[in-house]
Length: 180
Image (cartoon, rainbow, N blue to C red; front, side):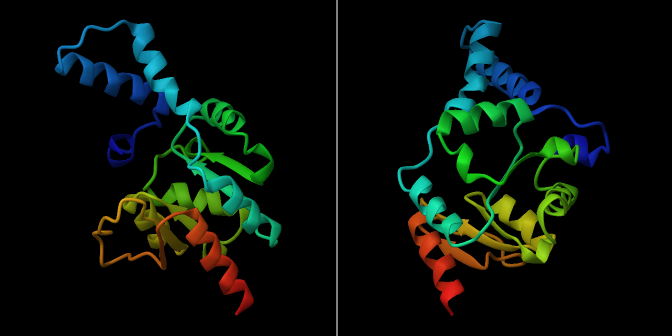
C-alpha cells in the first residue's frame, strides 16, 4: 500500500513479508535467524484449503464457470502454493499482483486482472477480507464475502453482493443464480 500511495515501484510480497516478520520478531524480543524469517514467510506456500473449498469450487467449475486466483503473493509463491494445495486443475488463471505492479486493494490490480480474463462487470470476486471485496466492488465487479467468523463487513459504501459462511454456501448461491 505504501508503494501505491507514494507512487513507487512495486516491492515483492516476499520482501515485504520478510521485513514485516523481522520487525515483528525484533519488536517482540524474539531471537531469530534470517533463515527462520524466510521459512516463516514461505509458510504461505504450504497452506491447505479449508475442507469444503475444493469440492465447492469443482462444482462451480463443472457448471461452466472459469476460476481465477488473484493474490498479493509473488508469482513463484503462487505456483508453489497452488501445487501444494492440489488445486492446480481448478484454476483457469493464477494471477499475481505483479501483473499490475501494485497490491490489492489498489484499483489497477483488479482492472489489470479482469482484463486478462473478462470485463470487471462479468466477474464475481470472492474474498474473506473486506478490503479485497471493497477494492473489487469499487472497480465494478460483483463481490462475495466469505465470512467464516461471523464478523461485520464494516463498509456501507461498497457492500458485498453476497455473503456466505463458507464455500459450500457460496457454491449453492452461485449455482442457484444460474438456475434462475
